[in-house]
Length: 131
Image 1: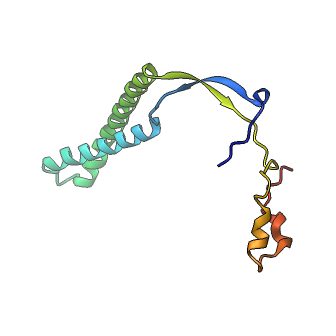
Image 2: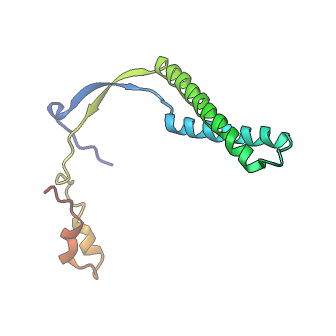
Image 3: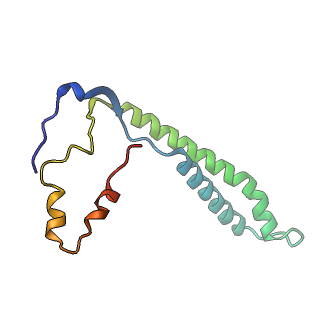
């Protein structure tokens, strides 16, 4: 592949921080699910009251298990986020402006010649419009 030279004036440099951060919503959702599963296991270990039933007991204790699990998931995400921020690296990144109309010579010319059934009237439909 041929590299196209670029002017250094077109390059924009900024300082960025690179780190791996956890998604808090995923940790809270998984924590809530684990809290529900723990509630299910703990509720099924004990015999249900015949006047109330198993489903009502599970629903009542889920009011405690799901939020506690969600909070524990959030705490784990906060600890992992703190750990990731300590390992963050600061680098200088460059951004080059690339224009679609700057094709190297001969890139699009051979496509119509190689394929005799190619309709040249539809060539402009695949071009990007900036408007």
